[in-house]
Image 1: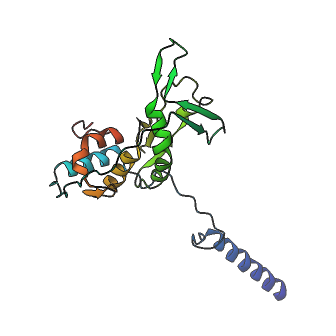
Image 2: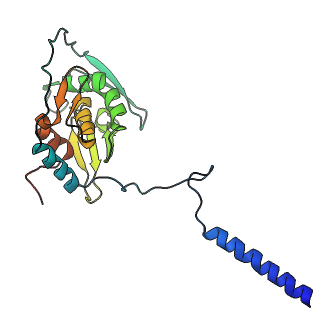
Length: 219
């Protein structure tokens, strides 16, 4: 009888220990453990962006070194560029001039060629460097299969604000826009764009358009 009681007691202790172990959370640093994070955690709201814009507007403009002499020539974009859609794999040919299928007018498409030639790769890199915001780079307008009705395509920055149901979309985003956004979000008053120093305060109106928030339009 005492042997049976001892066996039952041991089994109870084993079950209790196993149950307690299940309740202890796994160490996120352990090998093989997948940690899922909430996508909206840590992202700034529109009001927080507005406050940061106001802070820069009220700050003293940093001293900027005078730009050096421009001793280079600007290359003209090519007459033709091809886009390969990463979503559907379709290839779309873009020309600097084309005839509209609707009214046969000539459409000048130089901005689209420049975007594909000079901006696309840079924007793909820089979009991954944007801190504190949930962002996407929408390239779909350059794909005739995904966007058959678009005649003058452009790159689009999409910002997902955690408190907003509708995303902010900024059409015609460039790598320079993303540089400005990155340094603004990092709290920098100035930065070097590769050639000259740039004061963030000098580009507040552009920043308002990029982030979709106006300083003097508090809700």
